Picture (cartoon, helix red, strand yellow):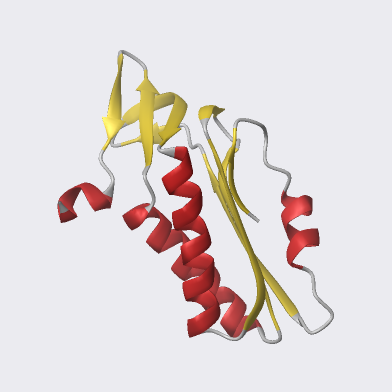
Length: 140
């Protein structure tokens, strides 16, 4: 399960998807919208993506993680559109026989997602709005 959605992400759906009889661990990461950034009071985040490419890249991250760690399943779902304070923008779930592989694959997925997946974030704050530069912008 590697997809984008305009709807609230259901963490239980991802956990259920990665659950596997061989898995003794399921690690999750939930990225949420916080109410501040760089000294500004944030009111909302908005995400846009090159959807077809982004979903392919999410799946590629899953394939890469499977090659690097002994994981059973991985799921990554990222929100598009408006994401309010406290709501999840991205949820990653990974199952593995052992927790270390699940944790490491989960961390890898969020770090690589931020570097390589074509998803852009606009931050709305009191007094303005700004597109937040992704790390991949520095690589071009």
